[in-house]
Image 1 (cartoon, rainbow, N blue to C red):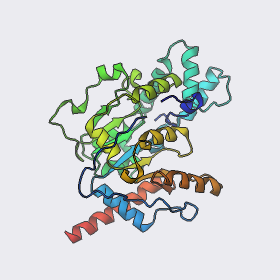
Image 2 (cartoon, one colour):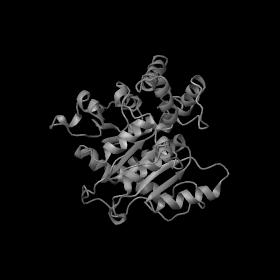
Image 3 (cartoon, one colour):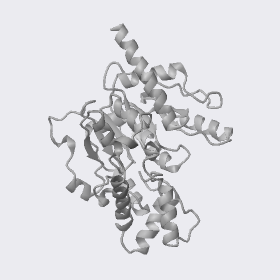
Image 4 (spheres, rainbow, N blue to C red):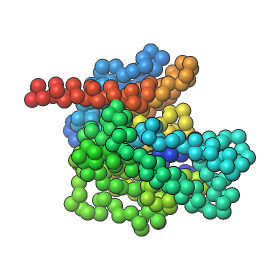
Length: 342
């Protein structure tokens, strides 16, 4: 599970807003062996999903066979970017290295400078609280935002590498009762956060969905994966950690919808490799990643499309809000057609 220092530095979420997978049997007879997104369409030829792609995505969501995975970009317009905080700390603490937007590296330097590994995490959470005190979330949550759209859809499990509770708030605004679940990567998390699944009668449903935080939660700085040291420890522990069966099932037994990640970043690559490397292609569900296209760089765009298509990841080239807006429109039409056929 060892990773180079440079890889670990880039493995964190990009904004303030990995796991060894084991193959599980399919969850129902309605599952398709190779579903949803054809892997061999070159992104050079298209910038959006085909009608067939959209139809398969909507059916997959409708069947409960899709799990959203939210990164920092899902909070765009609500929270500042992690690179902005990294720049601020780099200036304030005279960070001596060139990559001043690398939050794990900068936060590691600050932790050592302050002789306090928790200091950058505590500062991060103070920033959250300050933002929250000046924010009317219901006003800030635009109808076309990814959080708003995704919270409307019938997902029973949401996964995120973000630390904040904005997804929880969005779900509550839609009349749902989200349940918090954390990745128990260290003893502190295991001691302080009771699993939603401790109650054996609890079942994750679309009205009581589970929000699984992979990298910690804003209420406890010791739960957060932020510095380089955190990532070394996290990656080591994840090779041995057993996830709750329902979380493992969602991660392994469904298509994944990645929103808020940049495919070219090692942050996504680490997550990507830990998610797909131990599952045989013939037994793998196709997934979708929403990705801003590289500016004026068709070769890079084509390369990324081919690279991720090998793991059955289809790329939607566009903005996350743009995707969410189109998803909502198509989902509304999909529900209407379904009612007509009923």
